[in-house]
Length: 133
Image 1 (spheres, rainbow, N blue to C red):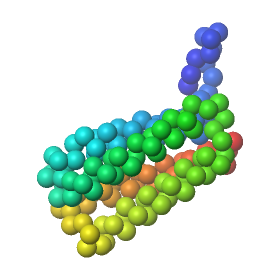
Image 2 (cartoon, rainbow, N blue to C red):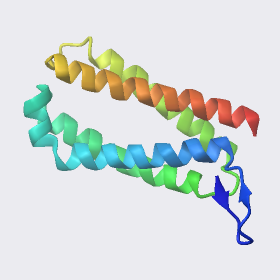
Image 3 (cartoon, rainbow, N blue to C red):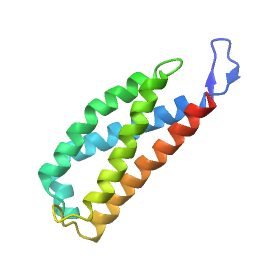
């Protein structure tokens, strides 16, 4: 819920709310991966460059999310692009766990799988929000 200038409450559109939450979490995850790649690599048994570059790649995605989340009515084509990107990220992240390219420990598998599932949940929520608008 947000407040209008007159002080009355109005509902925040579900799509914009989902986009705003996604913006905060994606931006936070980008900074976490980029800034703490070394300690995370040791903890998760994931390659440090992989974690750092995953974080760097998410920075422009965060900028795109900021653009979408701050529009009164997010452009449908932009939201569809984001949904597609989120689905591809989810599928790629999960598929990566079954390749020989990385060999995370159990915590690393849980960490990487959890972020993939969360991104998939955002894609589904964005799709639902787009259909309601």
